[in-house]
Length: 308
Image 1 (cartoon, helix red, strand yellow):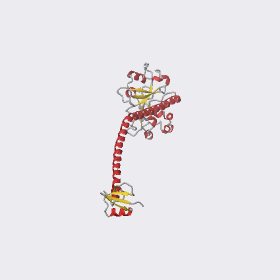
Image 2 (cartoon, rainbow, N blue to C red):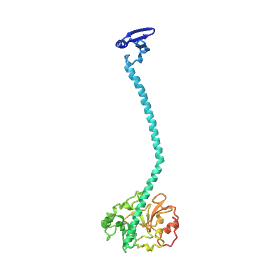
Image 3 (cartoon, rainbow, N blue to C red):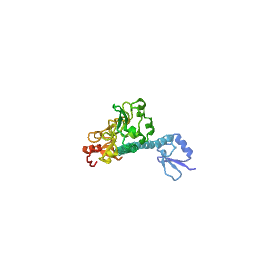
Image 4 (cartoon, rainbow, N blue to C red):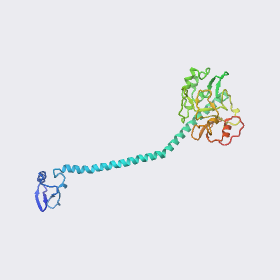
């Protein structure tokens, strides 16, 4: 068992057992500035440096061990706060940088979706022509002027909506009670994802696409051979940017000049899609030459259509 020695000033007490040394410390007879040595040839160190020797050592040891931890914790919290704030700043900067790209990607996706809708409508219109040897009328009306049905109702079987078509009572106008409930149904193929409006004030489902009134109008009977300006130079239908009508409305046709180009509200930033007589779908700039747009709107006007 090792012997212990206590030195105070020039006096040295010992050898002492570890138990006796602890008893002296407990009795208060050893001060924290006294020098303690373990063994015959060890070095003296101050009593307070020996863990567990002095009565308040446990407290001091715990306190001294906690203090650095507390400081470390505070430092860690400070670092986390700084890094956290910096992280938020980085996120905000990244959002500012990425947001335009995200919005642009969404806009591109919506354009593509709407373009595909017009392609489906083009297939429907041309399949109708293949079946009936004539394009669907923009709308039908009786001789007394009562509106009956829309071109978009007539092409329902050709845009994957044959069951709905079979439920329409064509002997009655679209406004008849037995028909009105059908025209409250939204049809995705007739909706542009860019447009928020989906219903008329009366609760009828809207269409965001419109027929060209110079080609498909009330009781029209346009055939491909009648498009002497060329099917690739004639608009049959187009995206509308406002003034939408219900897809079942027999008057859902208009002049492209009023919906596309300067002064009109385009369906998308920069312009709108149009469906041509050959079934192609093109994006037309809102800055298109008015003369070119007018020429594209007539099926047999004899105009020379330039680049668009």
